[in-house]
Length: 107
Picture 1 (tube, rainbow, N blue to C red):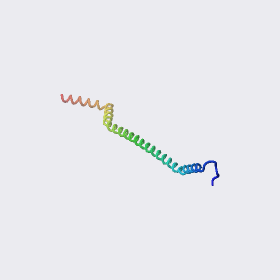
Picture 2: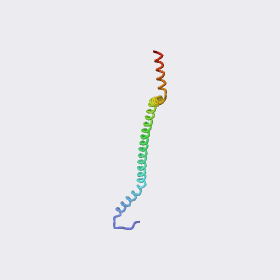
Picture 3: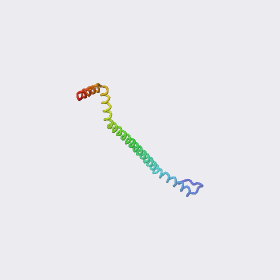
Picture 4: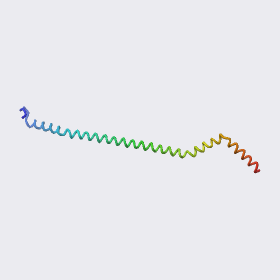
């Protein structure tokens, strides 16, 4: 039994019961804090995953647009290269000579 004190016994019992209650609730409070921290971390994880998916979707769309632009410009580029090659060769002179010969024959 506890030693007699000048404090009323009911007060010491109330304080003791409160201390026991706090000690009894401590594991549950700790687990609650752990669960709350875990759920917060999981939420941030999902936010980051969504952000990464959005960035990848933007990159994929940009790559698709670049591919379509290249597909549409193939005709133009091929024509430009062919025109450049023809302009640097002697084909125009040969064509002019052929045209002059045809006109002379037709006249």
